[in-house]
Image (tube, rainbow over all chains, first blue to last red; front, top):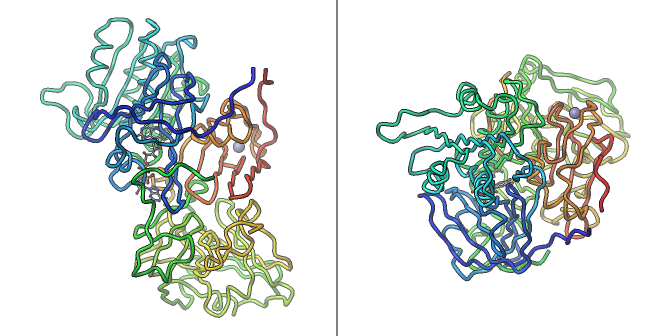
Length: 247
Length: 204
Length: 96
Ligand SMILES: Cc1cc2nc3c(=O)[nH]c(=O)nc-3n(C[C@H](O)[C@H](O)[C@H](O)COP(=O)(O)OP(=O)(O)OC[C@H]3O[C@@H](n4cnc5c(N)ncnc54)[C@H](O)[C@@H]3O)c2cc1C
Ligand SMILES: [Zn+2]
């Protein structure tokens, strides 16, 4: 089987939807759409009139079951170069150069099975959401837990959809931790993800868990180190460091 | 590499007021971007040393304490990174290469220098572009100890060349007879690297 | 200064998977599951799992075990350079 060559294509923005105060989801219609594997990303390239170019990677939020278009969810980094452009300038109808889907390392699909532990911080939930959306679309009942760290309840991306998924009683459970401002009356976690928290959430899966960790680099570092110290086999841990995005 | 112009994307700026101070193809920044090629080494000062070796009479090594006693100078210089940013009026405190060379006898054949750093980084320079006040080993930036992310405890600064020549975490200079390429020069980057001549890539 | 405190240089690090696009453009296939044996410490790691430093003149991929530079990529206007002398070998599934 010959793989199609990876090339830049102009994606047309067909919808922009705010998710939280800091994040928006962008739908792109792609002339050369290809089914992706949940967890993969696209590269986005911007070109200025003087020829200056810059590019960044964005995980695909939508599941492969959604055809001919992809959705990216982007957090606005105030002093960043690309994310403020996407938030403040890009409009429906605009074209943006993208290439993808890429990356065979940080992927999960139902064939890989579980039990599955998804650990995310901030916008790190995006590729994990593609996995969950795919899992739901496939009516999979793979035991799955997600541990998701946000600053506050308002910063939880896809909150309603995640609640809906958890209510489906199909083997998916979500655990939240709030690092700045937990909601009133919150009895759950209210600190950065640490070894004790991971041990609690991973407990029923023990060392069999397949773990996907994604988010700001410093968070992923901390979680990956804790997992290794818990003697989880390293082959079962996949990481996707986003770089210096919000913690 | 041509691409579809992104509507409303202005890229980076070359403000008119400072246009004449920006080498071709460079843009102005006011923050201090970190150039990363590897993890930050954290060599304790007790184990830090600076060595001048290679084609010299006999190699000289300074401990951190000894290095601190060398005469220093303050420098206010513009720096240009090959990744296209230029930062104006950066303020450093450091030891001139001229000062260091007073302590060694350089073999006349040693016309080139390889600067080497903790973490394995290297970069090559012609000796004649390091002397007469053109280069220094800095250990303070903006009146504060140089932050490890920017090369502390000490880095080379050669302001008239692209900033990859200003090796972070520097530990020594090795004199050589021939100009051998360092870490980036051996992989497509220009052997010399003058921003005003836009010497970015080899074969330019 | 003995400890590895988190700093911006660390925060800028990503996984080899983040360079998947560039690698695929060079090799014509996904390379993130390709195994690299480190020439420094002889341990194996998938390219997707290497430490990737992408905010510099080029990309540097390092061994997660010993930090040895396994591969470097530089794109100039006229060429792409890929150096991999820090890898003893790459091992990948045959294509087809
Ligand atoms: C594989 C992958 C997938 C990703 N997926 C997503 C996603 O789904 N959603 C999402 O929101 N993000 C994602 N990211 C992060 C994304 O690629 C960008 O890094 C992010 O959007 C920030 O880009 P920016 O241009 O807005 O900010 P940048 O200009 O890159 O700046 C980000 C921050 O870092 C600082 N900074 C940047 N460079 C330097 C430097 N050299 N020295 C010092 N400080 C610096 C800036 O000041 C700023 O605070 C992903 C990253 C990777 C690698
Ligand atoms: Zn190694």
